[in-house]
Length: 320
Image (cartoon, rainbow, N blue to C red; front, top):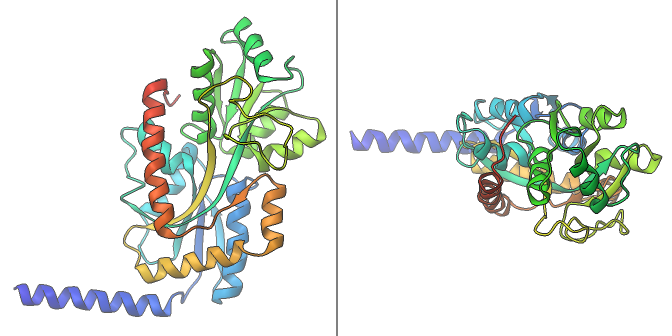
């Protein structure tokens, strides 16, 4: 019996190796768990265009929005581990959701394999122009005069845009209503329309509105100032000590995808994001290209899960 099991295992390895060598032989789907227009979607389409040209097989982006990125992520987790269904997911579903949703249904560390951390994006605390605040201290003072009467938008429950604002609320002692939307772009549109008064959203989404004057930026969420807006202070500089956060997006596949395919996909990510014009485009949108190795991304993701588990617990953050 042991001999048969060993033979069967060897046969599976051989089949996997042959499959990896010939991959891809049909079209590939990249699942983006948010609506079109956000930074995840932009990066995914750059990669998809490159893969179509480089691999000789059509690579299409499919937007599967909902539950802060959880629905699209779950679809990839449950897909065949053959490299033909790929996720370009966000930090919310891949690092925060396990702490927010006890019955999540999947473990993003165990059930997915890392390919590459594609980009990371500084967040910005922005307000509608009708809010009488030109800096974070003024916003805190204004909000404390109106407890429970102001609201903020996010890309959905469990997204980093949700947890980042909840951390801000906790550190500053604020009472602000959370209004989740089905993605970052709809959230930004709601803020521009005045449906909500503030948000902590990503550069690629809010920069056009800031430049046009339809939104006012008060601070950047990272521990260093952003190149695109060097005059905008960090949250810590603005008086919110202990606040530092990026939103990030990475490519992942089901855990059982052969290693050789993961390496092929990693090479595609690196080459897609390598051209100077691509990096400049992402930088103009407020994003930073990373394109690191599968091992580096896997280690980073695990550290993020640990970090945000502590934040969710300490801040008593709940999924609305």
